[in-house]
Image (cartoon, rainbow, N blue to C red; front, side, top):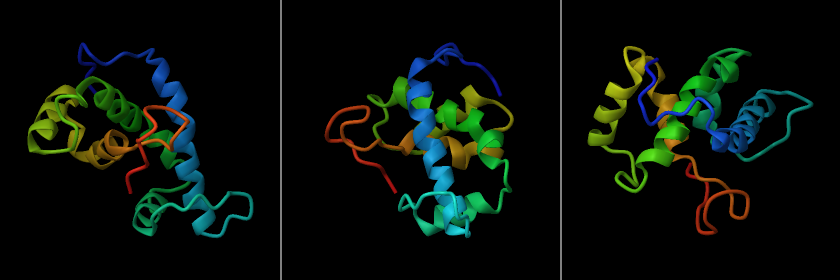
Length: 127
């Protein structure tokens, strides 16, 4: 993965959002029978896609999630929604593994946190 100039390795916002992504990951485990993971109401399509990646997938894909989150913070005023222009720009910023990681980058870019936790009050999680 490349490190474009706008991408900060020490982005404190990622530390705040990281737990929200981890919670989504816990939903996957719950949906596939875990007795310890809570039911967080995640979409089945997301759950199945994530579950097929294996037990370590959150950690494996965390760099892509983090990049998508950082990209949202950097580009959201210019690109409030995912589109071809944004994807082209992120492809260039991310580097050779973009095709492999694009679904995780996009998931993080489009993620909206629950009201009151982070962001503005009108933001709601995108499914």
